[in-house]
Image (cartoon, rainbow, N blue to C red; front, side):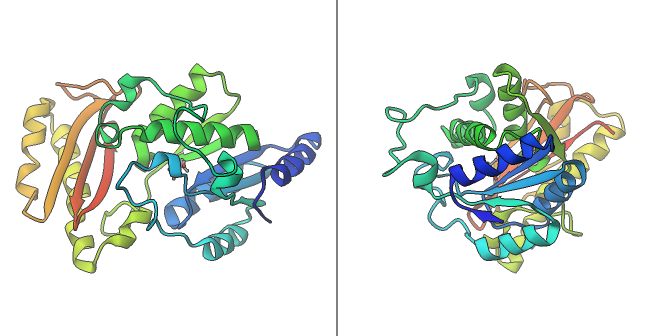
Length: 285
Ligand code: PAF
């Protein structure tokens, strides 16, 4: 069922709650791919009812980012969802979510602002305000859908860590279910932004997973010094890659590590054909 208004969703949720059914939410910005499909499958398997939100959230895009050209494919998204057994696809307009004329500045909208310590690093460093926009919209979706479980991919690991912190700090009654990164056979992590890459760009983009897998294999051989681990990566880079960051951080607090351990996640962001790509790997296991 495709719904566009908050009122319609609330009405349906009220019925389900009355029947004592569990509700899973998969928040997305659409342009659904197999990565999203894996989140949806997990929700459908675990919960009595599944809601997928499809909303390109304007307040999480920074000036100059790809808000206008972000792929919007609602028809195919809806088909993927109904084939997968989703009960509601919630696709609101920006006006529906933020009000007529949607005045989006901090002066006019109540924002949920995660701690600066979590947002001043990694993607937050170049995407100032991005995680405020993410936390605000996800909080709104939680209030609208009142899910028991919400499914997020580990591909956006900083987002996942920040959302877990938000849920804990604000006592939101939802369990966040982290889901594994889905990759192409080549190793490339699935992302809606891969659509911007040429065939050659997709080949160049393999550098992210190669660097991460190489670091993990060095760690498994006993190298723990972060400087030494980072240095193993430089030979993978060429003039087609513009590295934004390669950082080793704690899986819960995002504190920087100088010695890697099993609680370490390695985060990477780089540009290929001016498309910003991110990936990460957990060193444990
Ligand atoms: O990960 C995303 O697609 C978005 O950041 C989210 C969680 C749907 C919020 O708009």
